[in-house]
Length: 254
Image 1: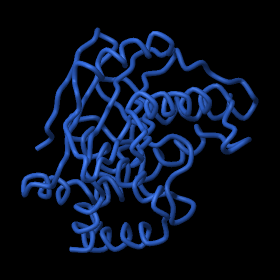
Image 2: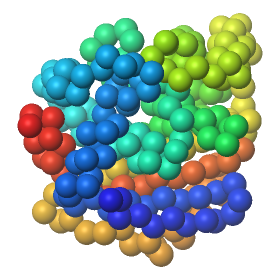
Image 3: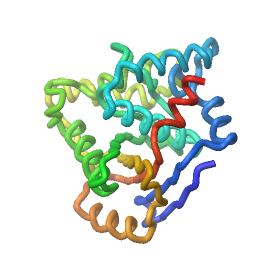
Image 4: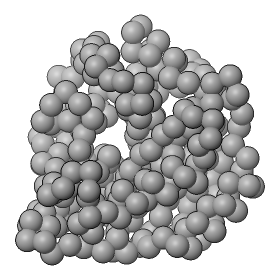
C-alpha cells in the first residue's frame, strides 16, 4: 500500500523513500484502522472514527496552507511508521490546545530502542528532500541540545513525558522514567547531546501537476553525503513524494 524503497546504508543508517500519488482502497482501509489510534492513543477504547475525523477537519480548517500541508505530511509518516510496527508513545493531537503539537513531532519505541521523530514538508518547486531533512535534523538537534529558538525556554522532554503518561497511550515504564529524567535535566539546563539518541527526520514534498516518483539513486547519494555532517546514535530518514493534500481532505470530509 506504500510504494516503498528501503535503502540499508549501514546497521545504523536506513533511508525510506515513499511515493504516494493517490489513495487506493487498501490505503484508505489502513487509515480507517489507524486514525483513531494515532489521534487518541492505542488504549482509547471509546474513540470514534467519525468524531476523530471531525476533530481533524476542525483543526485543518483553522490552519493556513503551510500548516495544512505540514499536518497531513506528519500524519502520513505516523501511519507509515505504525505499519512498520513502531510503537507510538504520544498523541497526534496537542494536549494544550487544538493545534499541532509542540516539542518533538513523535516519540516511538521499537525493539527496545527509543526514537525521536521530526517532520518537515514543502509544496514549493525549489524545495528538495535534502533541504527538508536537514531542517528536520536541525530542529531535533536544537531541541535536544537546548538551542530551541522557536520556543525559547520550552522543555520538549516535558511535553513528551506528558504525552507518554496519558492513559490512552501504551504505558512503558522505561520510557516514562527516561523522559522524566531528561525533563528534569533540561529544566536545570543540563542538556543532552544528539549523539545519544536514535533520530528519524522526515521530508514530504508535494508535487501537484509535476508529480513524479523519487529518483532513488540520486537522492541516496545526496543523503549519504549529507549525513556525514550529522551526529546521531542511529538515523532512519523518511522521504515522501506526495501529489497533494486533496486525497486526505476528501477522506476527512467523507
